[in-house]
Length: 227
Image (cartoon, rainbow, N blue to C red; front, side, top):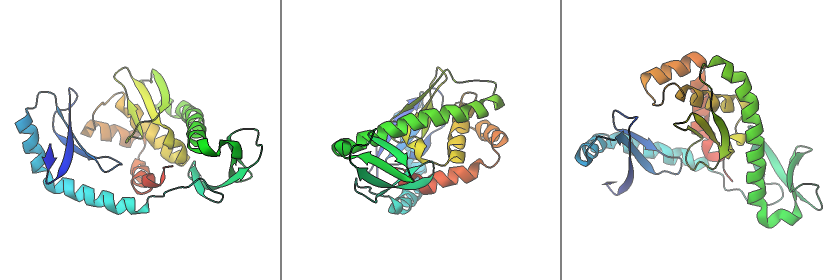
């Protein structure tokens, strides 16, 4: 549906009881609604949240002023585990991309495929770091994930599946370790509470009392976690 020229993607799910509005990281607007809700009911709920939608979009535009457009050139900085590393393009490295001597080191032969090399690096490092941190976090929970995967998740940092699998965006490798811990903890709570219900937030607060600090970090710095 459209609201004052804004396209809003409607998704129905059995897990929802009310209509909720989300502004995705790319600025698109998504409404999650109960599977039983009629189109008229959804439209009415969306229009009732018109002020909320425009306020969130304004905030999104403000935050995205800090977006970094990175180029594959010597000296360009790239994030890894919350730190910036400048790029050094060299001849005849032993691997396409690595961190060495405080730099991202890219073999010149892979210059045309540099984005692929970065994504491969981030995926491998994210998988290893998330599994490592999950070992420390999982003992706080009675329910455990069936699988842990690192993927391209579009506008989400992580997600869970109905079969209790956890998926994480490869960009998580750009975040500081405490923020990665928050993302993992957030998804682990979803194994018990699928929705962002009051019970979910209460459980998250018990498992990580300072989660708001890391949630805020993602809101402010998430736009910088890009290629």
